[in-house]
Image (cartoon, rainbow, N blue to C red; front, side):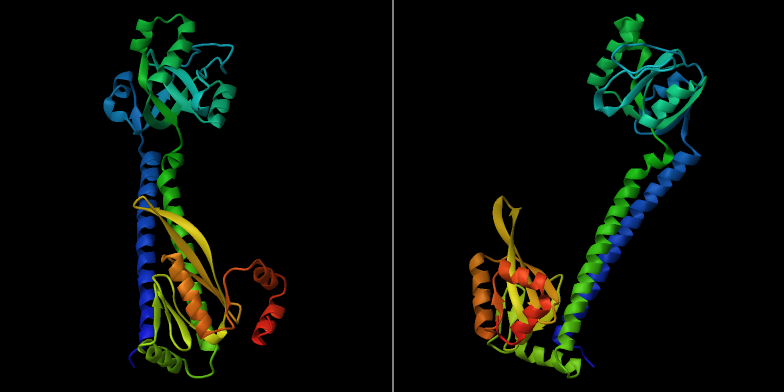
Length: 347
């Protein structure tokens, strides 16, 4: 049996929604796979640097490296920076722990995490394995580092030749791959939450429609189709109002609400910018007699929305139109009493 127009749109919406979620899932899994691959690469085969010549290479930027430091000695002691007999925190900028270390008779700068820095100072190792990503020192950082190192007696000429312009951002293999992993999890969480929320809202509205009548559901859908074909049907954006139903055919929601079960219609204004013009967007809420509530975005003008409310009032005079704190409080405080009164038209 061929589906009715209403059910066709409901199923089409569900299929499109599933396809979009599948695309988002594939995208997030692809990013997750790239992150896990990066973690595995950095964990099993980091780029090992053996000498200062290898470290001076311009191709090292953003590469994950491993350096075994055997020649560790103090480079500076200052009253206004944290120091140890092994390394020196040479600056208080960027909330970083910059230390200066000897590497092949040259000066290598590393940025350690707080825990690594404290462990580094506490253990006083004779050798140290440094793992991390190579970054470029900007001029401000490099200048501050050199100013601190001058206290050792280095001249500007010596510092220009001894200090590497690259520094190592110390991090574990997992930390180096954390960004794509976190991004993939965020994309999955957002898409999954949105998919579930929209699916539940559509399902609730269809179940509500079926529950409002004792007849076979297909007969309800056929009745909706027949009324949508009438010339008197009112259309405003994604909302259509027939003799007995308010039908919503939007990108996110496909629903049909019997006008006799429509308790409250109201909007919450929002604003958005598009092409430098301020366009008002409204979130329209529909409250049903079974306490189910749905909402859609309405992008038409205020006048168009008022026209919609006016048409609903003519079709269904018992529906409450417009937001009211009193109505909202009544539903929150004692919803049973509120809906009982509405059903007897005593509100």
